[in-house]
Each structure stands twice: as structure tokens, then as C-alpha cells.
Amino acid sequence: MRKVVIGTTAVSMALAVAACGKAGDNNKKSSGGTSGGNTSIGLLLPDNTQTRYEQFDRPLFEAKVKALCSGCSVQYANANADAAKQAQQVSSMITKGVKVIVISAQDSAAIKSSIQTAVNKGIKVVAYDRLAQGPVSAYISFDNVKVGALQGQALLTSLGSKASKSSKVVMINGDDADPNAAQFKKGAHQALDGKVNIAYEQSGLWKDTVAAQKMSAAITQLGAKNIAGVYSANDSMAGGIANTLKGAGISGIPLTGQDAELAAIQRILAGSQSSTVYKAYKPEAEGAATLAVDLAQGKSISSLTTTTLTSGSGDKVPSQLLTPVSVTKANIKDTVVKDGLYTVQQICTSAYASACKAAGLQ
Image 1: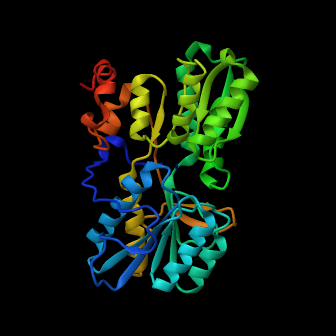
Image 2: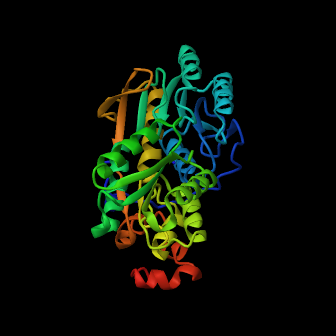
């Protein structure tokens, strides 16, 4: 669903990831904290439809907190894409007496009052991956406008000589409740406007099923033979779109994504998706853990937050922005494989063996 000035070649993604536990297991003490610790940190993630949160963000965050603070524990909850549930989880964290809440907001505006309540109780709040509204102490994410620009440029590059003002492109954006979605959209439009004809544009709500429905509607409206390419704001939606395109007999057209999900990497190798955007999970999750521990211990975070952003509520938020990287078939080996996000064995299952060999992965 989901900017780090840390190049992929410099980021080690050795993921000795502990078992993630059941999504939505609210306020359960994480194995990432020291038993009996007197400093508790809350981690609230927005959904489990995007594989990244349970597979990467949570275990990486927990491990870093444990490494930085032997007396700290992590209380974890997943909103399962329910904004009201996430608000209840903030209340529960307050009751539990956490010192800091790290939250990736399901709805950045709806969570504002809950964040205000937490801050009124003396709790520091870190906005993770999505800039929540309200008096948050810090924000860490990627340069989301850059993400959208990378997606748009990747689409144009894939179109090559077919990119023209008459080329009809479908845009399936993220959920409007997620402030990142607007930034991805902005960046994509900066890259695409005036170069292609965005003939159909809708929100896919970050859901593969919704994106598939929107793609089907676009095909009906525009005609299967008239679609030159598809902008999908993330990989989960790209999966649904790819299935719809296949069902309609459409192949060989560019389809973007984001998050470098394993299934997306395999689709890129197979040719049903043209690109994704790799936002290294390790520096983001570990950066959030560092911010949280420092805030819990009353330390300054000025050296960690190099810029300031304004949230939708008008709050000025000290921020750390990371740099995203575009991934195509040509650089899979030098990005997600080199960083250890996935092994060649994970990517190159029997169904993708020939594609991997052609791409130089085997």
C-alpha cells in the first residue's frame, strides 16, 4: 500500500523474520519486546490485504525496538482496513499505558481526534508510511510524489514509441482516505499529463477486487483494443487488473504497481506487469522504531527528521523521507534480490523458471 534516500544497493534486507502472528490480534504483547519491560510502544497498522505489513513492517519494527531498548515492549494491532476499529485500537493503547504510538492510518482524517486524545494523555505519536492528521510528533515514509512520478515514467518507457497524446491509458488510483494516494496520483499525473490520454480514471481503494471491477468497466467503456496501458497505484490492485486483462484477452500492454510484492516481481518476469516501485521496508520500519524509542526515552529526534511536512490538518510535522526505486525486469537482480528482500529460489518457482532464466536470475 502503501522514499528513502538509501539506495537499494546499500540496504541490506536480511530478513530473519519471526512469525508474524495473527493479523488483527489486537493489543497482544509482541515477542519483539522484553518481558516485564516498563516502556511500551504501540504499533498500529492499517490492513492485512497488502502483504507488506504482516510480512515485513511489523517484524522489522519489533526487532529494531528490541535491539535498541531491552526494557521496551511492543503492543500490536491491525485495523483490517476498518477506520473505526483503528480508532478503538488507539483507545486501547492509551488504556494500556503506551508511551508512544506508531500508526499507519487507515483514514488519515478520521483518526485525528484519536491522535489528539492520545497526545492529551502525554503520548507521543509517530505517523508511519501515511501522514495522519493531528498533532503527531514525527512522520516517516517515502517521497510519495516521487513514487507516482516513477510509476508514470515507467509506464511511458514501456510504451516507448506508442506513447502519444492519443494513446488511451487507464488510471486506477489508491484510496482517497489515504493521503499517500493523492501524492502518488499527483506524481503520476506530472509524468503522464500531456504525453498520453488518460481516458479512464477511478479509485481502486487499494483492493484487488475493486481494481478488477474498475478495469472491467474501463474495458467496456473504451474497448479492449483501444487501451495502450494501465497505471495501477500498487501491486495488490495490479494483481486484480492483470487477471481482468487476461480474461479480456489483453496482453503485452504496460501495467505499473508499487510495493515490490513477490507476486508482482513474478508477474514482471512473466510479462503481465511491467514495473513496480521498491520502497525498502527495512529502513522505514527501523527508522520508525528508532524514532519511537527516542521519543519514549525523551531524546531529541532532530537529527532523524531532516524536513518538515504539513498534514491535512495543517500541523507542521518533522519528517524523514526515504527514496523509492523503480523496478523492471532489467533490475530485479540488482534491487530486491541484491538487498535480500527475496531470494532467487522464492521468486523462481517452477512456474517462473524459464522466465527467470531469460532474465538472468538462474
